[in-house]
Image: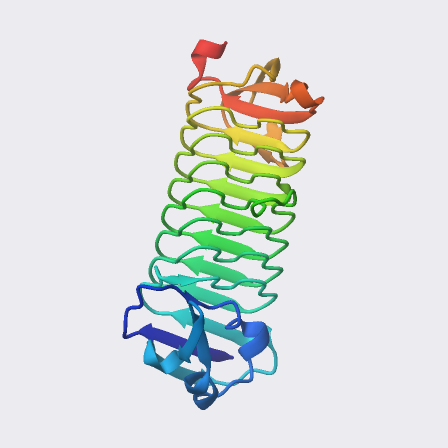
Length: 269
């Protein structure tokens, strides 16, 4: 097992880019290799050792044996874990945009908040965020129609707008509240929101499942009620209590399932 620890020692107002620093690429790097590495910063590159104290312990025969610890605030470091396929990354602080974007395997834990696009176009692996996420978690990128297709994202705080835009697989769990248009353009996959949702989950949804355990501010007209179910089994597990099931978005001939906690949404009964 190999542990690589990067401890911030110098703040950069221009974001550093970490897409090249994933276990797949650096599993056999020494401390000297990391200290010589030139990290992108805007249009230039600078030694990684200018910004981080670097420690390397142990060895690895492959990326799956690497644990990379970013031991501090990474709020101005973007693309952490981008396209990673194996290994583990732990961020002991906040993370900038695109953390876990296009990841295919391995695990990332952020012990803080993240900026926009965490888990963008994610294909596999696990992304766990202990704080809040800004908008576009698990979505497609601007101009694309392919969002998250596999893997698991867990958000222990709140999520911003357009969670899982164009989602076509995988699972997303949000413990807190969620802003507008969760699951917009969704074609497959599972979303579970533990708190309240501002409005319009499932807009132009064609398939997949969305569960809202809290209060929904406004339901789209494109969802038709199917019935009220007690302790329904959804996505292989039982939801305790009563839930209202809707099918939609009928505006796009959608067959997606939207489950709303009946007790929290009694005005819809």
